[in-house]
Length: 120
Image 1: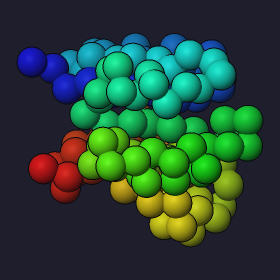
Image 2: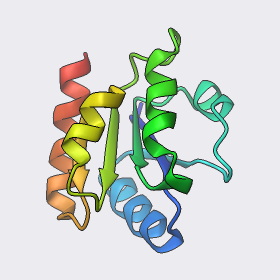
Image 3: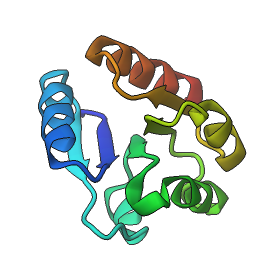
Image 4: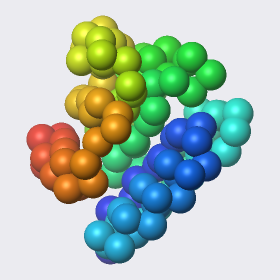
């Protein structure tokens, strides 16, 4: 069975590119609806969440909310951002990893694998 990734981003072009690339890598991709609803995570129960920090300026608070939820906190979460302070933001809000945009696709794929492996 393919690993499931829930992608939470606001940019349709980014969503299309990441989805296409990760599907070609064998992942089963789900894209969160807008506005984001935590119930989507419960429905999909992904193996990893890839979330842009800039979602209505609430990405970090959504991350914190997910990491405080006993049913969802074990799902690895990677925050992406153009913010140069994303490492600190990720740490403060419980993200398992982070990636600064723009990023190299190979770097993204390697980070996804290493983050999922750390959580097992």
